[in-house]
Length: 180
Length: 180
DNA sequence: GATCACATGTAAGAAGTTACATGATTCT
DNA sequence: AGAATCATGTAACTTCTTACATGTGATC
Image 1 (tube, rainbow over the protein chains, first blue to last red):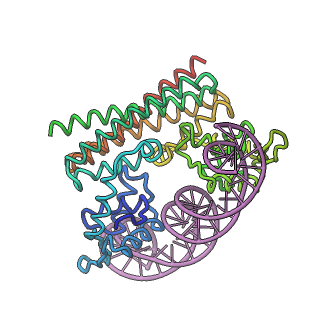
Image 2 (image 1 turned 30 degrees about the vertical axis):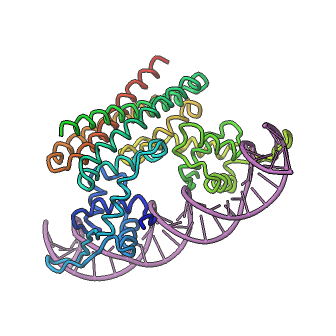
Image 3 (image 1 turned 90 degrees about the vertical axis):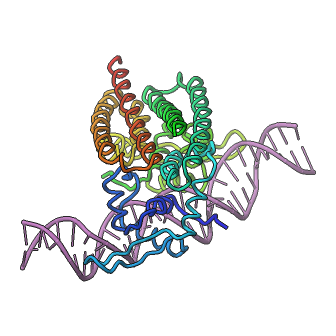
């Protein structure tokens, strides 16, 4: 029943629309906050909202009051279900290796949407996959670093350090969830 | 004269083709090494190689010997020029905020293609922009963390920590280049 | 009155995804 | 002989980018 094709931006929108917002509000979020990684271009956001509306995952209504006309979007029950299904997916090795940003994005919505219990489970899965991946990266480094140019070697080190930093974060976050 | 439209994958290919490789070789690199972040799908790689060849940035020749026929690609002088122009761009705040992966990718090719002097300058620019961005993130955190749900706050912390980790890396890398 | 911020859209094109398709060679 | 791997490609579809377009309300 779920398994619609929703692009990453679609999930970002579903997550942010926990409170009703207009396309313009969303653009400002993408322009002014650390959500900058997502495009604030109208050519991305308005069509994405229309797609979600076509699938009945959000519903937009023109707001009457307050001067300018603007279309306020709200998540429907179906939309909330799609978001939950996305958030509830297990953490795979492939996610860690190729879609790390998605994992953090999912986590950022998790407390509000699925509750702290699920966020804790997610973090433990993440920690385990990160740990395994870091080991793999170290092995790869050991096997190859001698034959790499200096900047390539340093770039690989930066990738490893960045995964290690996220691993430390995940452990701290697990502690934060244990404390309640 | 440069300023052709080359997608990220195009630059990855130009960088890797410092040594002659086939499309299949490239796919294996993307499948088996930390370059996994790039797609190993034939529907991405073969068309990308053809585009580069159409622009005369690479040249592919069918290798005769050794059983199977395979098309080995080499970078042309024009291709090397495009790669250098891309690598030589200054590090901007926008790069740091929205295209961090590109910056690391560029750095990984820099030593071989532009030499250590340029790599050192790049690192100093990167360190400066990262430092400024980390300050901005801290300010944003201070201003907003009280009104965020726990998982959102933790996700933001992870972003900040990851930039801080890269900042520390950049300082270490600068030292490595000073030592020669 | 002009300019800026608000607010929403469309069109053309680039590039990636998934899935399918094909054939050669090597291995068991 | 059959399976796995090598090796290259295409087609349909989705989504994003860039650029253009339009109009309103608020501010100087």
